[in-house]
Length: 489
Image (cartoon, rainbow, N blue to C red; front, top):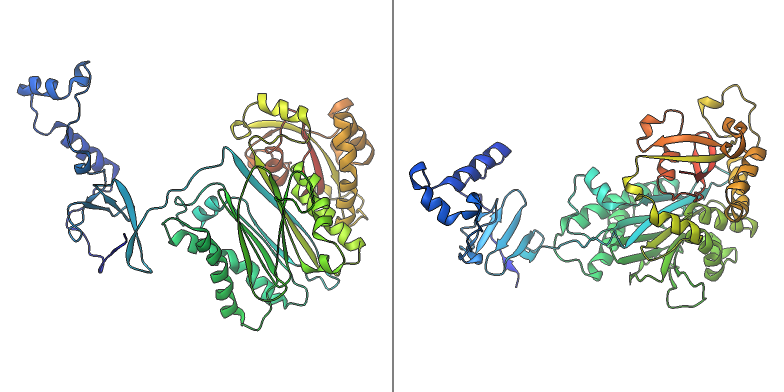
């Protein structure tokens, strides 16, 4: 039962904050009541100090005071309070509570469940600008817990993994409105998720999205149209939201149209449509995109077919490029944007069984400090690297470079290292393609710290440390151009 509180008052007992003070307090408590003349008493009560077994604790556990807590005089001796954690402890039930400041009631503290060993998530996006240079926007936050630390928010009460993805359609919307929504939405959502530290029900998660949209409407003007799609993942739950014609498409691994793993969340108006899904191992990923694709005749079934194989291979950006390329060929009106999300379960193998087998026997990716890889580079007209000064200016656009690598992916995936070597020697724009034999395109040993690889762009370092040995990467964009990576060691 929630307990209503009056105004918070400061406790009378000071809490030791410094580590030194805490150590002094512990030493004092340990030695309290003992002296050099009473060793027999110390041996009787603390036999473990003399090589014996510890004495049985006969004290009532409900009367124990956890470190850092003190009795809250307003609530009685059964209630303890920690200023450092801003948390209450109920001794009879051994449960922890926090104050919901919106209702002034105590609620049971939420405890986040860590599913990271079983489920991981990664998303990426691609966009094509319109003729006037205006582009639709996307926001990718692959780890909300890390983002919360940067914003100095507490997310310990939320499940892991946690992530947020969004696309914002600039079609027929003022650029200032799109920019305001893209920059402001996650800044509205994250503090709300941090503020309430109780148990999060599905309805509350759905309400966070609606509240953030309403706040943005107030700031930018209620008459301004918002066209966006959102995916909020909190552990094993996925909240999909759509407004203004944008699409959220959940899909599974089996590729059966109309299957239980498929869900379309689409709003054709300015009314927000939201759906919460409990994820299962049969779920593979999510596609977020805008209304222009549907108007160009691309059905949800066709869109799922375009992204499924790339998402399965852990190449979400290639999946987005495949969708946008098909949309342009179908006459979709620019600007365009798409975001693809991969849900990877621990029991789920890669599309290449040999790669999955090798990945199981090598060191965990998080434990690696150095890896080795080769790359293919295609420069384009907007590449700005100082390393390419003095070289002939490339004539291909960034879209043409991405399309070329996208077409090469099936051949390189099926052909293995030998196909990669042949393609690199023939078409790559990197100097390393001139290296002999299977070293064509070799970047050498790379350190996990991007600062220690001065000649290798940081996006390549981040990408290669997600790969198993023998695995081909997603399409990676850097200031030099667009790349494909093959991890070799």
